[in-house]
Amino acid sequence: MRKKLSAVLLCIAAFCALFSVSAAAAFEPPFDVNAAEIYMVNLDTDTVVYAKNETVPRAPASLTKMMTSLLLLENCTDLEGTQITAPAYIYDELYGMNASTADIRPYETVTAKTLLYAMLLPSANEAASITADYLGAGNLENFFYAMNARAKELGCVATNFTNAHGLFGMDQSHYSCAYDMYLIGRACYDTPGFMEVASSESYEMPFTNYHSTPEFASRPDVAYIIYSTNYLQRTSSSIYRSDVHGLKTGSTDEAGYNLVSTATQNGETYMLVVMGTPYEKDEMGYGLAFSVTSQLYDWAFDNFEVRSTLDTQAPLQEVKVKFGEGADTVLLYPEDSFTTLLPSEADESVLQKEYILPESVTAPIEEGDVIGAVRLSLAGEQLGTVALVSHDNISRSSLLYTIDQVKTFLCSLYFRTVAILFILLVIGYALLVRRLDKKRRRAQAGFMDGMDYRSRRR
Image (cartoon, rainbow, N blue to C red; front, side, top):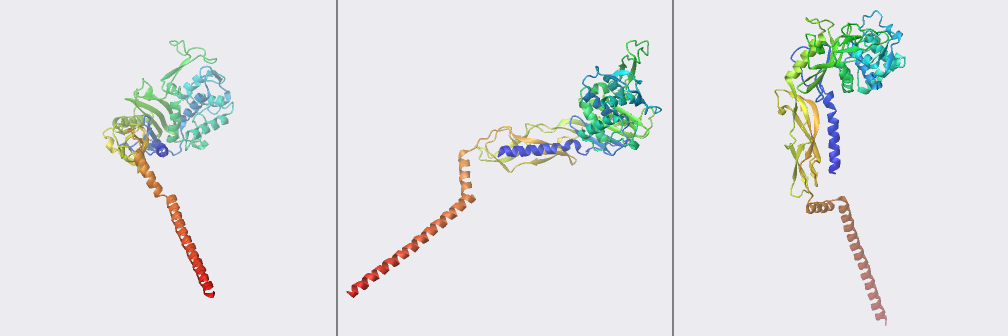
């Protein structure tokens, strides 16, 4: 029975833990955030720190290329060894768009690695379409289907892709949202090789059949150099931050300025999606997504920290024990310390604890047995659930167990039914014996009367 109880409690804990990432953010910055949509998560604890209009569909611009890059990484095992020739038709839709490129030309043969760097650093639109043609086996619609299927697998709720680069938006049913871009960005972040590329400041383009001479005499070993559009990770920019890495920029008139990024300080990492800042630049000449991103990162690092909230060596509750040898209660300890994000000035007392406990447990109990659980919340938002375990071994008292079994048997329906049937049987037997005795006496009396009658006749 104890094992069944433990399994049930673990299922409850697993179910409650599902809400830690999807819960609405419990924190609010003390300033206006100049962006249409925000989604900010502490990656160490999967805590949503701040969210704003995060599921409203809107044009994602070149954030789209995160999905294109993800599919390239997932479907191409040899980036350097895979040679891809740019088909001419993909340039038709780019003509006259003033779209960002990496100067990859029609019929130029490049590696899949080059396409990846071209998409993630200068946000090259032709690189995205070349990738889509390659992975779609010459049919872009095949690739768009794959993009949407992968988005569905990731749990996206408001995403539909109809191009591989993001140049077009809502009028072509191409849209996403900050929450979905977090899911896609998180998949990219967890995919080996992605962050190495996305965090790069520049990439040296190798020689090809269309780029056979170096652009600069000072660098005769490379054809030319492409640079990241994320100025927060460009050391030469006035807004450079050493703590920011990746993932992707994106901007159009319709979408505004957008940025998906990560930042790490003192071992703590956040992922931040900023979408729909006004399509204008700040006083230093940079898109507003960069200043909004820096503002939110400064707020998070200044005001929150990741801490352990439970002491695994301190009991939280106790539960009655039935049939325990020398113990009628068992102390319950947290199974783990539960690391979460808390305001820097707050202590663990700000957490609300809700206990999930049985009225009692039955001995024997072994050290490590799961007896209950504690559900933790902050400002009304569930953070997660931790199992509560025994640190003691409690054996079962044979005497107490036997007495209880006897008592249970005597009080059972089966015993009461048998007892009643036995009593009824005894009563019935007694009545039958009495009835037979009466018949016997009447028979004897009749026999004696007959004897008297015959005696008188003589």
